[in-house]
Length: 260
Image (cartoon, rainbow, N blue to C red; front, top):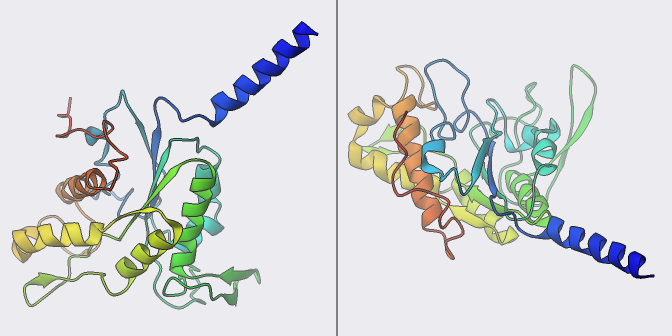
């Protein structure tokens, strides 16, 4: 009888240990090529993040992938691969929007419905005949947030980084579209929100159009070069450190670790 009781206590202890926050959490990044870019010479801000992370306190895994939207990251099973790895105390940083525009029936199948509503649309892939229920941009973000929370992880929604597009001496912002909808999705999910678009746009405005142009390729207004990625990563870190409750306390360095 005593032996059975010990087994029960061990089983309960194992369950508690599994549900308890980890001593060393992992920060997962999901998004598009502005976060993780495989094109030679270009770099996403996620690739520039490791020097900012206290490696003895947290891990960093960049699962963002070029060409993906909030819709395709879910449909292709990329989110499922991340979700199965999540443990209590982990973090999920998500930044989408650059590939969410366009028509819902576009052959690339990337566009989501504009906004943060619950409306849906049925589409059919012309090549395969496969049917898909398309949701809003905000719905996909809310889904990632809710599923991360269900695993005990902490989701953080980031508004998409600005493109190198200017008008009247100011860089364009997404405060009336994807940036706005990202914030609404975070609020609806009771998730953390970083206005990355605004943080970077403020830096770009201060630098000026000519200086910012050097952070991008000569014919590309979306994808940053390494210096641009490092500036964007610095803004990400600043935004995370400013979150209410300081959830990243001790996990992010005051200055990036020098390259070895």
